[in-house]
Structures are given as C-alpha cells and as structure tokens.
Image (tube, rainbow, N blue to C red; front, side, top):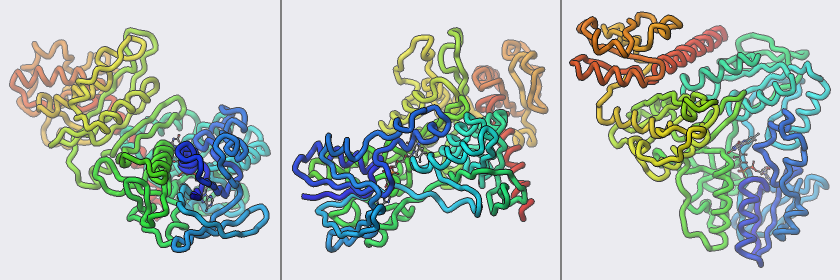
Length: 558
Ligand code: FAD
C-alpha cells in the first residue's frame, strides 16, 4: 500500500508519523513545496524578535531525520500540481529541477494548509507574509539592512499580526499597525479588545483601524484614508483562506466556508482521499455548522485521526471545534474559546453576558494580577457559548478549564462547582472560574439582575438612577457621569435617600455591586448591577472611542 501526503508540516507530518507507527509495511511519501518540513510555524515571529535565537530551533525535523526514524520518503521543494482522483495519481513538480512526474497512490492525504489572503497592494515595497522559514529569512534581511531605524507596516491586527508587532518592537523597529476593521483582534468583543489597543499605543505602535493599504511610493505606503506612512517593509498578516485549489480541481466537495468538506473521520467526498488542517472545514461546537478554525492543535489532532482512518484503526469521530486560542502580546495574555458576542448577535442567538475581573491568585499573596473575563451563556439551557480572557498570569489555565467544561457539556453555573487546585500563589479558594460560575448562577436564578455597559446610557435616559457604591476615595479618582456616590458600607442606613426609581448600582468590578443589589432588592428597590463594574464600563467606553475614531477614518475615505 502506498500513501501520498501533500504538505509536510503540522497536519501532514502528524499523519505521516502516526501512520508509520500503525503500519510498518506501507510506503509513505510526503511532498512539501517549501524548503522545510515539520518546522515550527508558530515560533516564526519569535525568531524575528530574537526570542528564539537559533534559526535551527525552528527546524524540528529534516527529511533525513524523518527517514531515519520513521522510514518516510520526504521530498521538499516538490509541489503537487494536480490530482487525478479516478486514476489515483498525482502530478508532482520538482521545484529544483523543474521535472514533473506522475505518481500513483492507494490513499492520498491533503494537508496543504491555508494561503494568505490577497491583501496589501504595495508595488515596489518589500512585502512578506510571516508563514515560512523563508519569509522570516527575508524579513530578517530587510531589518538587517535598515538597522535599528526600520519602519515596518504590519497589515492585520489578528494573532499573527500582533505577534509580528511585538517582535518587531523587540528589534527596535518603528511599527504602524493597519487594520481594515474597526478594532484590533476582531475575535474579541470590543470592550475586551480596547485595552489591547491601548497597550499597543502605549508601546509606541501607530495603530490605524478602519483603513488599509492601497498603494506605495518611494518608501511610503498609501492608506485608504489618504495617509502616507513611512515603510521599509510591509508584513502582510490580514488572514488566510483554505488552500483548496487542488481539491477543487480534483472534483472533491468544497463546503460552504470554502474549506474542503470531510466526514468525521477526515475522509473527503472521494473514498481514497483524506484531508486535514487549515484547508479543511470543521464542525462548530456551538451550532454544529461547518466552520473554519485554523489552529495547530486541530491540524495535529486531525492528522493523527486521518492516519488512524487510513490504517483502518479509527474508533472515534472528530470532536467539534471550539476555536480555543491564546496570544501573548506586550505582557498581556489574550485567550478565547467558542463564540463571541458579536457573532451571537449576528446569528440572532439569545445570550447572557457575564464580566468579571478576578485576581490571578489570592490578593494577599504578592504578585496577584487582575484579569478581565467574559462569559457568554445560553439563557434557556445555561450552556456556555464562549469565553474571553485578557490579563497576565493565569489566563492560560482558566481558558483551558472553560474549554474542557464546554467539551464536557458543563453548564455555566456548573463552573461554580469545579474543584480546582488552590494554594495562594496559584489561585484563590474561589478560583476565577468558580467566580464566573457563581455570577452565572446568580444571573440564571435571577437573584441578581445585571445591566451591560452599553445599556447604561439608555437606562439612565429613561429614568434609572446610577449609584456608585465604591468608597468616596475611589469615586473621586473617576466616576461615571451622573452617578451618585453611596458607599456599600453606608447603604443599609442611607438607602432611604434613594429616589423611588429603578436603580443601577456599580462598583469597580461588579462584586460589591452584587452585594449592593442583593441588599437593595431585599429592601424593596428595583435594582440592577452594572456587569463588570467601572472597569468593564471604562473598557467599553475606550472601545467606543476607538470605533468612533475608526469610523471617522472610514467616512473620510468616502
Ligand atoms: P501547514 O502547517 O501550513 O502546512 C501546509 C504545508 O503544505 C505548507 O508547508 C505548504 O508549503 C505545503 N503545501 C501547500 N500546497 C502544496 C502543494 N501543492 N504541494 C506540496 N506542498 C504543499 N496555531 C496555533 O494553534 N497556535 C499558534 O500559536 C499559532 N501561531 C502561528 C504563527 C504563525 C506565524 C503561523 C503562520 C501560524 C500559526 N498558527 C498557530 C497556525 C498553525 O500553524 C496552523 O493552524 C497549522 O500549521 C495548520 O497545519 P496544516 O498542516 O493545515 O498546514
């Protein structure tokens, strides 16, 4: 039996090595059009910044090491040009010699990844994607020529764009970040992304949302809002689309997302052809619809699963994709899972929102750091629809706990009942994930009604009275316009001073507000707690200001 694998990095190489472990007799040939196989694409930005100092650290395997350990026939600089599914052959071009050959297979695995979106138009300007070791070599060469004074424009404020920005700053480059949308990190909701834009600007990044590159001339790029930005180099990171051209030409079914359609065992519409990775549609955990999730974990997992299926040893179907992801940028950690609120709104799905701002570990133990958490919950079933966390320490483990909870079908309230490891330097006796569960449970039972940051203005316009229950010292440092200050500890005695009107209470993060809301509702007031308190409201305001700035750029273009 002979298996041909197209693409020799995440999904392809996971499949190849697994298949060898399952079947010592099979001939396994891997064609990779690039110069390297099994390289650490997720580490590429960090070699630009010098964090991964040795280029060789990115090269996890070579054709020689893979031949020695796994008896794989790995051909780099070999591009598969076409598939004849009926004849079970592929046409391969040796990119070094230019020679083409026709190769037969019994099973074929497509692991060709994704292609960069056509993005920046900057003729005459060095423009590179950040997707291969060769890209990094080119970027390093331009940075080397420009010295410490390099001006770099990064197009796209997604995960890879922001990783590029951070590492360019480490090289002392002057960085402009250009983003077509009206916020950075569009997988986040605006109030969660606002602080990231602020951190970028504080670090000296010129962040330009609501615009894109439309041309270039003599060391400058031209933006769609008419601005000219100095640039020695453009890094194109505005997203990817599935590399499905070979599959399409071979007559394989392409799904509605543009990715290759596969069944739960990674088999395409042709029974002898399998596909995995960024080029392939997944099934979404929330709505069971086809979706694109371009993450390394899924590519590796599905590569392994495809090998099991090819070898005939598969026993389980692929789990739906959650889209769990994480990013480190400028000391912040940003992590998310499931759907965001924007997507829920667009899909018209009912949802409840919880914002919290817990500490990474017990506040009395040195070094605790605050994080912002957002949980999205289906009101009818209490199912977790998604979560976003922005902070520093401890963000990674919390998002993973929530991802596990979602996979296991735990409810939002069920998070309160998880027994998680605690010692003061690691967590709190009520872990941030437990706290999310408590707030979700309160919302579910109706014991505390909440109001979102963007609903406050309308509530006040229709007569609600805003009561800031923080201390007067906190109130003096900054308050929401129109708020009365009635500190929580005085509320029991002074609540009669409150007018006979709907009341919205707020504190710094929502916790004292919850206590105030419980107290006032038991004293007969119609009360709601501003979810996430002052911190979420301020972040929302910041996001709205960024959006307005972005919108004014867009209207300037028209
Ligand atoms: P790839 O790993 O991209 O491999 C596809 C290979 O197929 C390519 O090498 C390509 O040259 C080859 N190929 C394509 N067409 C042909 C052809 N016709 N013939 C021969 N070869 C062909 N994911 C995370 O989960 N976490 C991260 O932190 C993260 N960071 C990233 C950082 C960067 C800079 C990049 C670029 C990606 C990052 N990703 C990350 C995404 C992750 O790398 C991908 O999801 C994963 O590599 C997809 O695996 P794949 O096998 O589908 O495609």
